[in-house]
Length: 305
Image 1 (cartoon, one colour):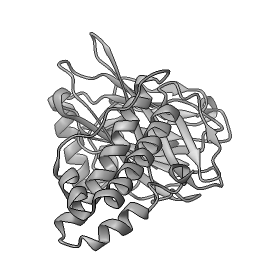
Image 2 (cartoon, one colour):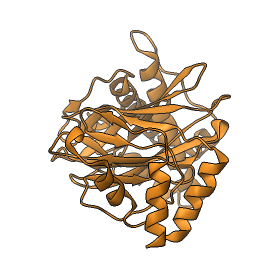
Image 3 (tube, rainbow, N blue to C red):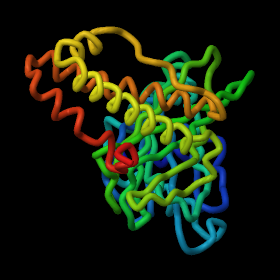
Image 4 (cartoon, rainbow, N blue to C red):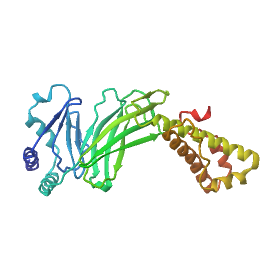
């Protein structure tokens, strides 16, 4: 009971509460709590690691009709005495934690369930988001934007991933880590789902950072490199293939009428094929190389057309 009382006092003593529209969110000041995986009657409660932000997402009635005391009780229900001591110690230390903002996207196939900060150091800034596939379909590639803001600049990153054979199934929850490096203290971070490709070949999102081009480049690079290596194996035998794989680098793609993102993806696809074959070669099983050359690059099978 003492632990509960202390948390309520600590939260009530903080300077502000901010209300936002869609999704309905009550964001409290940043005070260090340990991460909790427990659920409440509220739709989402995020307890981020040290240092930390607390956010409550509500559905139904307008937040203006909610009693703050009820929210504070719900938010502090599971916090023990050790956690309370951590809160008070860090409030006294005056430490600030960046605020994580999730861009409202009602029809997004990936929903952010929770976020927490692993490291708030500007040069080693890392935070984590838990996402759930709400689309009703499998996802085989995605791009998520993270935009960090300091007092001097904004910096954007794309977390692009071709899942290849690790399909993100409907309703499945996955954890994704994001990172950035800045000279100055980061004040806010914004997360936006930018691109999703489903297992049926359809896509979703504004794709403002050209994930579709990068994905197409990857598949083309993998296809061309596998075709080249198969031809080399057939014409000159195992030794020539082994010698080729032991070389560093690969032929550059033709960049005519291609974007920089496509070219980047192309080189990534080539490197992926060579790395996989190099690992097979290092195992000492040369016969397995032929089998590897016959395997598709990813679940799209685009590289087999």
